[in-house]
Length: 352
Image 1 (spheres, rainbow, N blue to C red):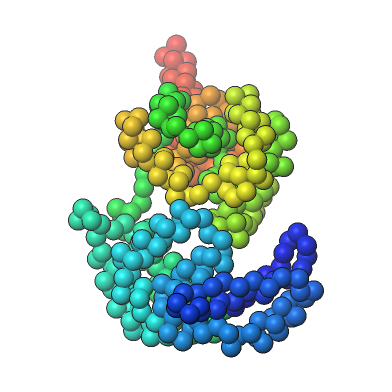
Image 2 (cartoon, one colour):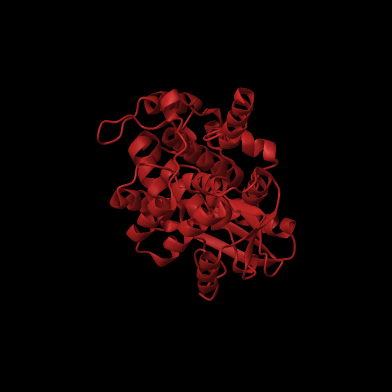
């Protein structure tokens, strides 16, 4: 069970689950409480109606958590399938019987897990799965007082092969990527990332009110769900002016229904973004890269156009130009044309 404040009304909600005659769980919401204590007291008085937590399985708690968080359907399905595939022994097990020992044995198996094609599972994917399990454990503890044994799980340290090299694509390559995309909103989303240098999470949580017609106000970021919105990575806010073409396309999106610039009533899902992006890369004949590489490509494009590091740093939201220099040293030191020109000039003067 849990209480939650309605941002629109300022009232509090009480939420809990009731098991129906057919064994399934029904999500119950009681609205209109003046305070969190009132909502919590109501929950306590109705706790006997819910037997979730006695023999309720890990899988059932996952479904409850997804519903409570109003998680996107596509994202929920992706997580569900990953858990069933790589944490099947936990899925149908009563949550109270998932001990620390059970979890540690499962983690040991996960360490050597493979994909269907026999390739080893990436460390990041394994850590994502561990993260899902820990979220379910936390939800069961916070809402149904079931001891959170999942806290014992530790992430796997990254191996050398897990670190991705930065991939840079030029404007012609980006246009090929765009031509491969058929979804209108996603096409503009990718263009915005490439032409603004914004992070994916910063773009996903942009509301229409954050775009004034010429520039966007970036001051928050979203990891997964709407409930995960927080400040930007550095905690700094910034205004990012947009080129004419990107600006006109955002104006078009601003006139569509919904509060989100990229989405509608809810932000565009992470799974949809990632699946389309990888498919577009294959169709365009481009090498594998991450969506975050669009941000790196933006930095490279500005540097090659002669934009000062200080201005680039401000545009992409780094804490200081020093951070930008350190992060993109291989790009900034790529040509060193000014240094070479100065050295050659000295040599010529000496010879004279």
